[in-house]
Image (cartoon, rainbow, N blue to C red; front, side, top):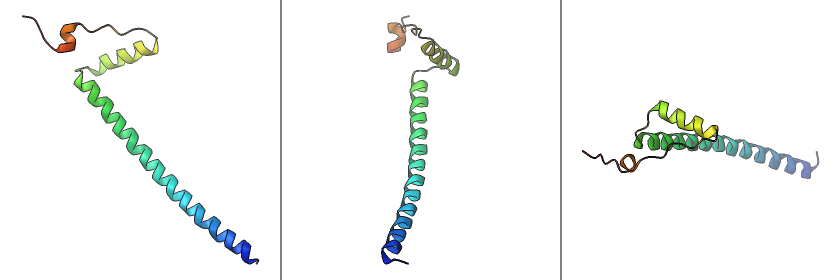
Length: 82
């Protein structure tokens, strides 16, 4: 076999192995990123004191192009008048 073909075949195999390794790493990074994004979303929802039902209603309203009801100043600050 031609020496140049052997060299190209060897480099081809080396590149194919590296590509497979990088694709596997990319998939793992994507999984980690999605998990962290989901944790951030859950944290934001919990910090607002929303129930799962309220979140679902907000998402549904957003999908339908409706405006979510504005929060009152009391709800925004957490202050309650007695």
